[in-house]
Length: 108
Image 1 (cartoon, one colour):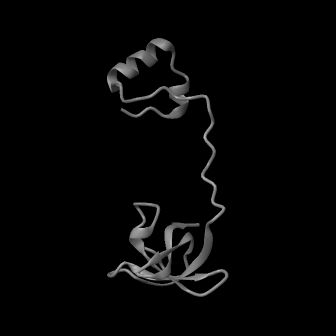
Image 2 (cartoon, rainbow, N blue to C red):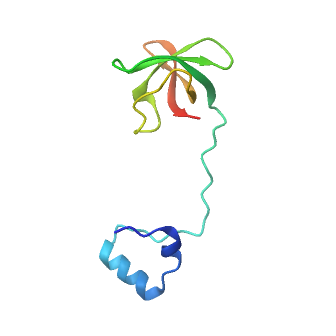
């Protein structure tokens, strides 16, 4: 069962009770507290200069600094399974096998 947010916000008390009974107790009532988006202060950006799809690794040319190794399994998006040369990405600095590498990779 899918209910978009516009419909959800327009439901009355009886309708909400019916939805909760259909879905079960796994739904928590929404809070009025607003959630701030994740801050990306420590994230760097760069461009993919090489990616080997069959191996899952490549290199990112940093906007400032030298090229960094990365592996696709270090992406933040589980749906991200391929990167193409020239794509812009954001990342954090980490370590792989004792060397500096890009981790938590995401498309910009």
